[in-house]
Amino acid sequence: MSVNAGTKRVCPPTDFASLPNAQSGATTVLDTPRDRAACVTRKGVSNLSFPRTDPTVIMAVVSHDAKRVLLGRGKSWPKFFYSTLAGFCEPAESVEEAVRREVWEESGVLLGRVVIHSTQPWPYPANLMIGAIGQALPDGEKIHLEHDPELEDAKWVEMDEIREALRIGTSGLEEGPAKEYKEGGLRLPPSTAIANQLLTAVAGGFLGADPKI
Image (cartoon, rainbow, N blue to C red; front, top):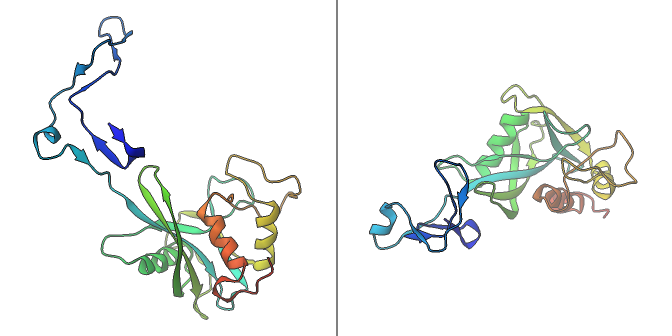
């Protein structure tokens, strides 16, 4: 049984859960708690378990001159919708190493400096999103998608276009952008997403970009 907003699981000896009737298929509402099946977790010192948390990196990548941002596009996303790149940390891998590896695998771009910016719990099912901002090497900005065919497209976007999209082009994947948005313009994730926060940071001058917002 999930408790504490999913951070813990317990196996109580009884509960009031309704059960389907084996013959009719109808559910039976219980007035008294039923005994649950035997569980090994109730035989030790504690019957608590703690679900795993998988670290995931998500990164805004700026060009070496900090004037452009690397964005990727999923194959099933709406037209003109792009976001930052992301992926899982592998065992015995640092966050910085994961950022560089995932960016290279998905886009072919080579990173130098990587700075951790912020984090966001994403319990679907058990992720901790670790937001980072990375900077491409001078000779590592060429995009090619041959390493990992996960993305439909990846491209460098000028900082002014990022700022405009943050102003009028943000939404969830299943939602439409603001009324000011014009068809064909760049679309980005909403402010509730850590991708949006990372893009806002680089558009505001993080890692040396010229701040204009």
